[in-house]
Length: 66
Image (tube, rainbow, N blue to C red; front, top):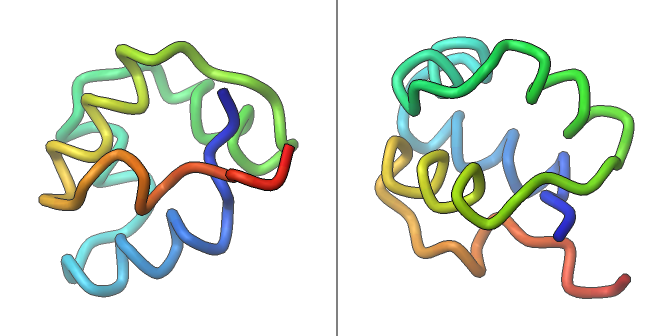
């Protein structure tokens, strides 16, 4: 599944944290941020961790137009 970069950016801004801080808070690899920026797929666990760290539903981050 793919995380939509713009949606991720908006969720981070709403949570008042940088994208790097969100990745760190979620406890996932810093390489995930690069994958998101490049539009690469990430696993469901990663999406769940990022959503939890930002306090948003998973679907708020997903690129549903694959």
